[in-house]
Amino acid sequence: MATLTVPHAVPPVAEDCEQLRKAFQGWGTNEKLIITILAHRDAAQRRAIRRGYAEKYGEELLRALTDEIHGKFERAVILWTLDPSERDAELAYEEAKKFHPGARALVEIACTRTPAQLLAAKQAYHDRFKRSLEEDVAAHVTGDFRKLLVPLVSAYRYDGPEVNTSLAHSEAKILHAKIHDKAYSDDEIIRILSTRSKAQLLATFNNYNDQFSHPITKDLKADPKDEFLATLRAIIRCFTCPDRYYEKVIRLSLGGMGTDENALTRVITTRAEVDLKIIKEAYQKRNSVPLERAVAKDTTRDYEDILLALLGAE
Image 1 (tube, helix red, strand yellow):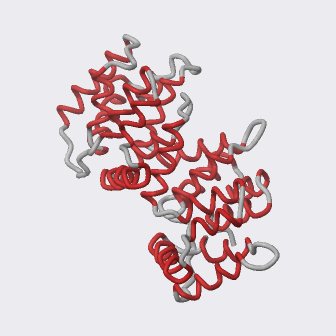
Image 2: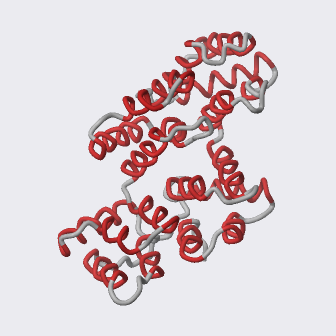
């Protein structure tokens, strides 16, 4: 499911550190060497390189990278080099501080990570920013979005397969009644979406479809321009079909008047070690174009090269 490619024979950590040091020295930065190493190492290997680099050169690798590279290429390299939990903390921080209704990083972190991964991201947030993710979301997000997102990021859901079918039936009815009354930010909707396990939610959404002969997301399209409804749909899609959810994020980031590099970088760096292969297949099926070709068309130079490397392009 991952697109990350790691060499069969990975060089020793000390050698990777030496090569990265060489990439930073001389008249110009060797961006290709940075990509060759970092874009082909898994999270544990990148963690070892960061530790080895700091021990050998007395400097954090992330600081060295920031001094040498810039712009969207820098952002992609830094996000990728971070541990997954640190990366999620960084993305959550950026979004919480500058929240706007169409933002999706917080929803993705809360709804596509396992409970343990979300907990790790929140611990990394504590360590990096000396406060909690919940308090920053509460401080910077307002209205119905705060009412929804604070419990969403506060959740520690049950992660097992058990499902209560009678509960799924009754909560599908509750969701339908509230949506029918256009009470989209009702406490009951938020309680169900922010506390139930993934397995329980999938059973509830399937029950909704069975009882009312259409998916719940269809009833949440009453006003296509309503960003709160769009956020509710995004939450549901993150649980029910994350591959198609992410395909749409990438498709929208590449279409239109300009490339949304932040969204494109976020999806590729967070999913390359998880399920980017399935997302690529969904993109090909939906658009009849390989994702690598679409990315190459809309990006350039070193930024293009690192994204294609993470996509597993030959």
